[in-house]
Image 1 (tube, rainbow, N blue to C red):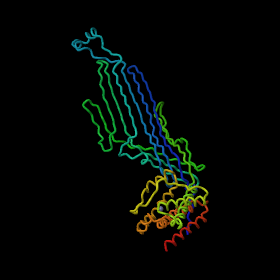
Image 2: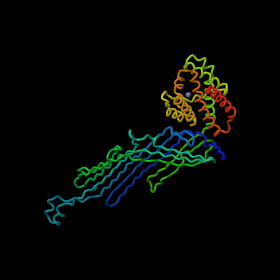
Image 3: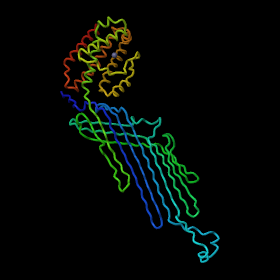
Image 4: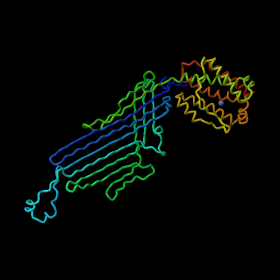
Length: 432
Ligand SMILES: [Zn+2]
């Protein structure tokens, strides 16, 4: 028979911490030029920041994004200025009645200094677009962590975002001869996903464009070596856009990560021991008989379970749940997703969710196949105890086999005997 490959120590770890991918760019360009006929200058400034910060938790094969903080800012300002040194303006109309010699003698030439001027200014602002029909940054972020037996890892993060764009462009020409100005504008704005993209040119030649939100994404893949059960990256540069000339656009993509891997074995073991204590307390017939009603029964069981746990382990039971999953009278499980979220938010081993789910599935089975008994169990300590022992056993076994597969350092022989004993007693009573 093929032997089951033991899982490596690192793949079992539960990773918790933050990862940040940050793209930042800038441009600061200025150029001036003077010739005998023209003066000009142009400039462009850009600030660009695209960042995703993730809070994550989970084992490599079941990693969970707890939260994502997404930032996107793009600002640019562009200007251009050109002015002729001089402009020969036409002579007054009555001058044109005379011949050229007369004109030259009697009408001084009409030269304006400086001459015509052309100015262009454009500003672009981009931000994160958000609306009801947009997915949240968390839903648009993806992570994958691969861990190899030799301690190498590969981390992939990708985060998408919708952006809105606002562009304002003005193009002005000022004529030196008559001082008149001609102005043209071009504007871009972002509309909703369902709106029509369109460009309208009005009678003065001004242009207005409406564009839908644009999807942008930032991504990074990093590889490295796990050290002391940790993945630590400090602003590791991944990509770079180098300036081609002075003041040109430059950009860097950097990744930071601080992830600590915790060993889930002790947590799972404590949970299993707690469940065993509850199963034993529920199995005790004297408590069932002593209880005045179901409420009192639950109180006595709880007291007993804590007592058993303390006597076995010397400490207080873990008490993981603040949200409880339960099986209702229609044989359906309530608060399944809330419970799962609770496990993830507290960064606990995923098997604890599977344990509770299998416990409740046993109740569903009881509810479907032994409905009268199940309903009776809501008020009768005897039946209630039976039902709970059955459900706890299923959950305990889930944790037991997980520990057996994953945590070779835990000696489970003694625990196995305890579980078998509860199992045997439970079966005997069920058959009776
Ligand atoms: Zn139960």
